[in-house]
Image 1 (tube, rainbow, N blue to C red):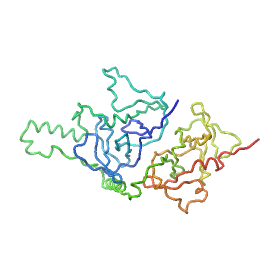
Image 2 (cartoon, rainbow, N blue to C red):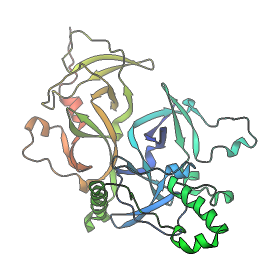
Image 3 (cartoon, rainbow, N blue to C red):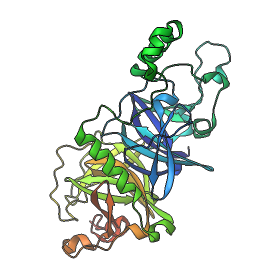
Amino acid sequence: METKPYLIFKQNGLLCGVEVGCVREIFFLPELAPIAEAPQDIVGAIDLRGSILPVMDLNLRFGYVWQEYSVTDSAIVIEWQEFRVAIIVNQVTEVKHISQDAITPQLSYGRDKPEDSHHFLAGFARCGADIIMLLDLDRLMRYSPETTKNTMPVSAAEIQVEHQNLQLETDPKLLAEQPKLLDKPHIFCANATAAEKAIFRERADNLRLQDDREKSAAINMSLAVVVFNGEYFGINLEVVREFTDIRQVTPVPCTPDRIIGNMNLRGEILTLVDIRKILNMSADTKFLSKAIVVEIEDLVAGIVVDEILDIIHLNMADIATIPAALNSANREYLRGTAFYKEKIIAVLHLQKLLTKGGVFVDEEV
């Protein structure tokens, strides 16, 4: 069964997924500029390297009460047909490949017109013990029911204002005394601390800055950002088949110490590999959690990682040459370096590392 990769994220306690092919960028939430006459769920805009990008609050789009934003929130830039928008999420978790037979397109609640019950969901995916809601990007971008105008307040503060406005309508004296209660403009993160506001502003400034060379360059590399021993690395998504949890590893005798063992992955025997020693890093295999399943030529292996952060899309111009200070053993298996959320990641040349790094040794017994 053919699978499709989805970027998985958490939002307001919900586990959601969006097709990786529509994701253009992920970054921490910056300060948003307020905009007038926008739909209720469009809570502001950002200057993304010369382009004004609207920002959608998924809580409001789903009809939930508005919640304060946090410096740990992220924005995912989505491009669908001619539309481009950033959506606010609480946490980007990983990328999962989901098969069509694991997706339930629609749930029936016993109500009339069940076809109208899911405005923004393409289906529900079963992934182990989790149920992931897959977004329907076409409806997320375009859907605008005629009956949704001013159907509900979007925050606790606006609930209070709405109640006060009802009082104003019936009490002219109160209206004369408190005219400022009506149409109060929204202020981004008004309750944030001074330090948090500075972080939001700095992020907005960083996204706005870009030279002409970057503006004209085309995005042509997608990377999975992973962690080894606290250091950040990028793996080209072209060789990534899926991300998986590690469970029930069977040791393989008479193999190099970089071979952790085998694992049953839905009936397929997957060999788990620890590449840290090849990168001159210490290896500790006591706590195995995540692996990236890669397929290079005829070789399929599970690369053990400490953590899978998210995916990013880079211009080739964004990848810098390898600093001379890096260890020579590392340099051989690196394509270069790039910036990720104010950190530097090393972009792995995984094909060279697996085929020429001595990971697998052909030996005749």
